[in-house]
Length: 124
Image 1 (cartoon, helix red, strand yellow):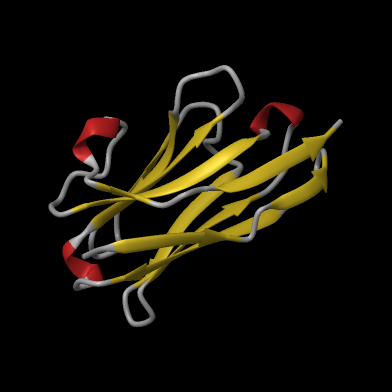
Image 2 (cartoon, rainbow, N blue to C red):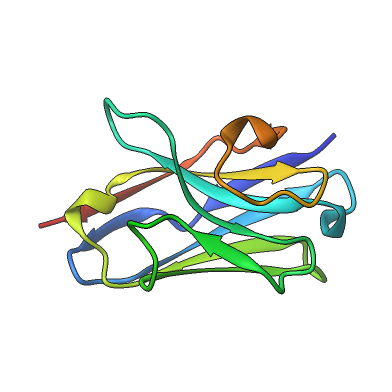
């Protein structure tokens, strides 16, 4: 069974950077498209970024385009989210998600497996 474990969250000042990691176990990582979502307190879970199974294709939510970079390492079964120029409104719990198939877009229901999340707090 697929298990996802996020790490790398923490407290950072506005304008700073963080790198999140998602460790994937249980199945063949390269068979899964992957995504990052986030959920701020009192808000719905929103799409942050997605990456194709090969890692060659990516897409981003409008609010993070140009600041965040998603990537994956199919040799070591990990996915990453490099977050630069962080803003107070990026504060949220960040989740990684896996889809057994090609889809790596913004539809939450297309992802079958989810991690427990890692907290990112940006101080203003």
